[in-house]
Image (tube, rainbow, N blue to C red; front, side, top):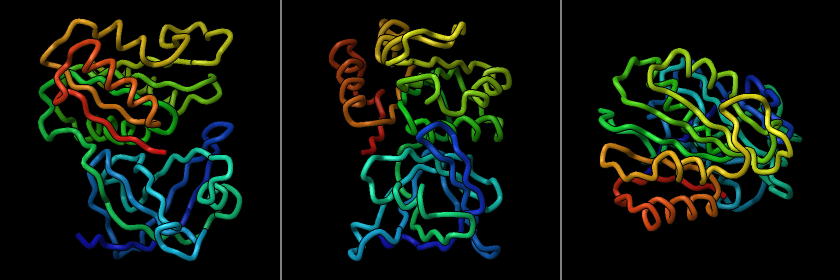
Length: 245
């Protein structure tokens, strides 16, 4: 399928954490991007001569139908040509060419099961899009539990929004796992260690009315899929994932 290419420009850049930035791009007035929460676009960045070496895919972090703005939450990778460009050269007004939207990591139109969303780092981006889409569109849903993992508290993304969502969205809760923290904040949402012990404890009793969505680095996804399907015994149709890196 030949995807449509869009021309946009950066209109805002903001530090999200010590190694992560939020980028907002705006489409021209005559353009509009119809996408589903959870999808991604592929940017063509001026970092190499061959096109395949210039392409990088990033999940859309905002909900659909938010004017002509798209938000991306991007972590800086040491030696990564794309993030070196975005973090050190890109600025307000920099043009960004991208194609898409792409991807099938989306929720069903009718949410009939409880959802457990497991992510690490910027893998939270598609889930942020999904959660705000559910809230904004007043979509009927069951319980939703977001489990977010990072190394240190200074690496937590969108925490203020998670607090707002917990108050505004019936049935929504979240847990934050810190794998390298010596001490935890006095907050019931925080757990010491990785994301895996949280869902292994909370969902050890296999239920047919539950779906898992997982997004993050491949090692985390491999472990989570094995834990859910092999160790706990969930059906593979209940486990959905999107990897990056």
